[in-house]
View (cartoon, helix red, strand yellow):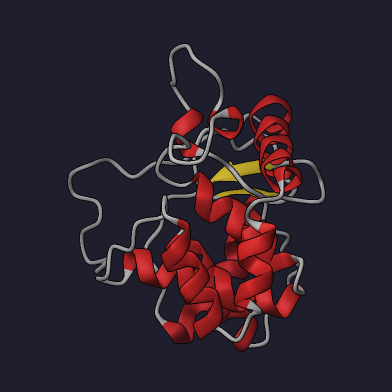
Length: 190
């Protein structure tokens, strides 16, 4: 997800026009055997990422720009060397504060069960209606969806690479799967 978010951000900065609506998907739910879903569990028993997904919904309540800043900051804190844990609310609130969000409002919103219900609805729709099994999965207006495992393209190629990706998968349901054999992938990618 991190790589896709940075890629989309870079492509947007380069002038690629795309309307992205981020939706929640709880990876801990995939392959889970028995017990209640993560979003029905009490805080502290909600898996590795659910608190961050709820926090993202809380950030969205403060506006799209607040969400974008918070979302990229959470992904960077998790993946750019810091390995921030996504299961604790305190660091998420502090990250919200650092991104200029109303941290007190964020803390209050994190206790709102409606946000966990929004995450549950996103996840249930993604898995049930679109076959999502991992992130990032792109869902296009045509109804086509595709999971993409990728590294972050170089900044000067981000928009062109995204244009090719959208052109290949947005309307072509006859392309079922594309995968590079391993090894040698990711030969030369990083």
